[in-house]
Structures are given as C-alpha cells and as structure tokens.
Image (cartoon, rainbow, N blue to C red; front, side, top):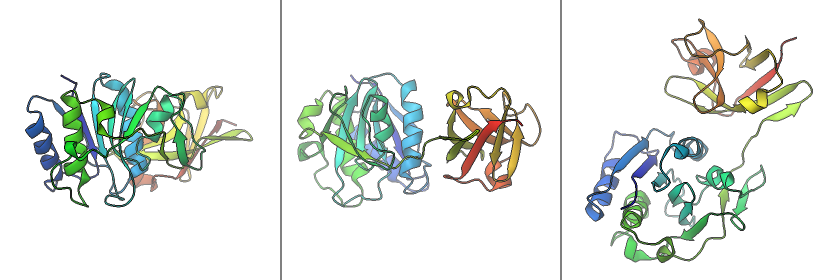
Length: 273
C-alpha cells in the first residue's frame, strides 16, 4: 500500500469539485489516506501552486502521491503527466506546476522558462495516455476528477508508472524571477501572499549572508534588521519564515493590506548605511 494521496488545487471549497475527486479516489482504493494540502491557490495561479507544492513536499514520506490541479489549459493540447522522484510521485498537468520540483533533482531550464530536460536526473515521467486508468467518460473541463484522481488511485494500488503511458523526456517550466545581486543590494520578489497577509519572497537566508544588519525595502517601507518571530515588535517587520524565505509581515495584521504588496512586487535587501 502506498502512502497518502495529497491534493493541491485552485478549486476552493465552495463547490463540490474537491469532494468529487476524493470520491473517485476512494471508490478505486477505499483504504488510501487523502491529505488536503491546499485548495485555496489563486484561480489559475500556476506559479503560486508550484511554489506551495515545492515548499511542502519534502515534509511528506517518499511514498506520497501528490495530485496538483491548477489547470487553466484543461482540455487543450497541454499534456497530462505523472512523474516519480526520490521524494514522491506527482500527477497533474504539464504546465509548470512541477518545474521547481524537478529542479530540485537536477533538471534545469532557462530563467525565461521553456522546457526542462529530465536526462541525467533521477526523475522518471510519463504522459498519461492509457485510458484504462481514467474514468470511462472524460470531460474536457474536469481532468482532476476524470484523469488525475483515478490515475493517483491506481498508482496507490501498485500500478507501475510505465503502465500509464509513454516516457516523458522534458516538461514545462515557468519563467522564474530570481534574486539578483546588484551594486550593494539584492533584488528579490514576492512569491506568495498567505491568508495572514504575509508576503513571502524568493530571498533566502543564503541570499542575506554577509549582511550584518540588513535593511529591507518593500512598497516604500524601510525595515531595519530581521525579527525572529511575528510578535517581536509592533508594525511592519521582516523575518525568515518557516519555509526559509524572507517574509514581510505586520504584527497582528496584514502586510498585503497595509503595504499593498502583491505577487511579483520587488523587495530589496541591503546593508544598513
């Protein structure tokens, strides 16, 4: 028996989409455990979903099966795929959701996006094409229910990856803004805004090494020094959060509301002058 099936979607919880996917999975494998990782990804937010997935999967056992459905191209020519890595199996659309994960295992693509070759990496991937592992009727608009959920359930019963379709040699990777070192400063970007309004950036502890007393600038706000936790001081603060990334936060409030921060906004780190 495989580990849990872990779901990440942009479906929200107001409709029956998530529950229906669970029903499909449990009808095929009534004994499998299902974990709801997140269903509040911003609608069509592929980059956000990719970051949430990449920052979460290392905390699961290697036998977990992740089903990620942020799929604005559902029904189009985008490929449906599954991949096995040393740290889990992943099922979903080939639209960039899995780019950061294969990057963790050596697959690389230009920062401008494109395709990442899996050659030389420990990742094995296939295009989902064997309809025996789909529902009998596949809707053009709900592959989460009709393709990805049943495929994950069959994988949890021991169906080998190779049975699902032909090998995949590369996959889509999204353009990825990365921290940029400039004269005397490091330019980063907001990756995600959580439900508390904390703005999580692509700057990490490694990026801030060498800054004895960093100054963080975001949305016109200047923050001197890093806090250790959200309640350390009143007002706007900066800290390294649980994912190891620099966050802009407001003690007891929302940085996104107070500063108007949004995904993609610049954040600058420099030594105090």
